[in-house]
Image (tube, rainbow, N blue to C red; front, side, top):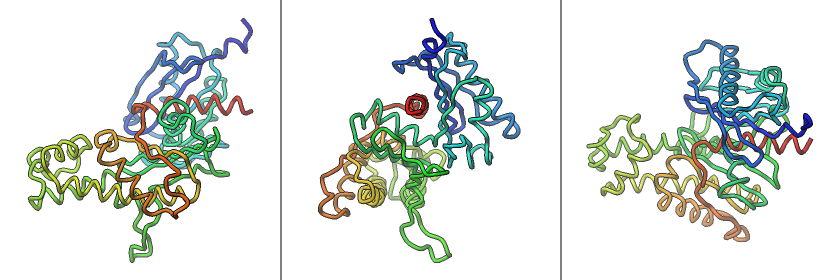
Length: 324
C-alpha cells in the first residue's frame, strides 16, 4: 500500500461550548473513534492548543488510526477565524486571540489542517449530508445563546478574504440611541426569548414555566419552553412566534442578498419547537422579501445532531484538499 493510499481518514474537531470534541471518520465519513474534553480548566492559549492535540490523539487511538494515515484535520471554532492562515482571531469562550491552530496541529500531526467557524462547519455538514443536501446555495442559521450563520455556495463555504463571515446575528435592526444598534441577536436569540419568558413568568402570564423554572434564566432551556407551551403557557408561544418573525427579517435579508434555495435552521430551540418555529420564520421571510423572491426558497429544520460541526469540519478539510 502506497503512502497516498493509506491517507484515507479524516478528523473533525469542534471547540464550541464548554467541551472540545474530536471524531475520526473513514473515507465514507462513518464515525470510527472520538474523544471529548473540557475547554476549561487549563491556563492560556498554549495549554489549550496542547489539549486540542491530545484530544485528537486520543480519538485516533480509539479509532486505531495512525497520524500518517490522515488525509487532513478540520477544526470548527467559535468566533471569527482567518481561514487562510488558520488562526482563531478571537474566541470569547476560550479567551484566545490570534490562536495559531493550523500551524500547531500541522506541526503535531504532519497533515493539512483546515480551520473554519463552527457554524460554518455545521452548515457544511447539513449541505453535504443533511437537510440541504443537493442545494446549489444553502444558508444555515443557528439561534442559541447568540445567532450564528453560515453559507455554502456551489460546494464552497462562503468566507471573506481574511476573516470568516455570515455573522447573521449581528445584523443591525435599528439604532439603539446610544451610538450602537439593536441586532437580530439582541431580540431573537434563545437567550433573548428566555429573558422575555422569565419576565412573563414573573408577571403571572406563564404559570407552568414559573412553577418549573421560576425566573432563573439558566433553567429556561429550549425543552422547558416547549414544555411550557404544551402545558398552556400561550404567552411563551407568543414570545417564540415573535422571535421567529424577527428572525424571518434576517432570512429575508439573506435571501435578497444571496437567493439561497434552502435555509436550514438548527440548534436546540428549533429542535424543541420545529412545528411552531420553522413555519413562522418561512412565512415572515416570504412576507418581507420582494415579490420575485417569494416561494424561491425553503426553510427547513436541521437534520443532523449536535455533533454536526465535527462532521462538517472534517468534510470541509477533505473538500479543501481536493480543491488544492
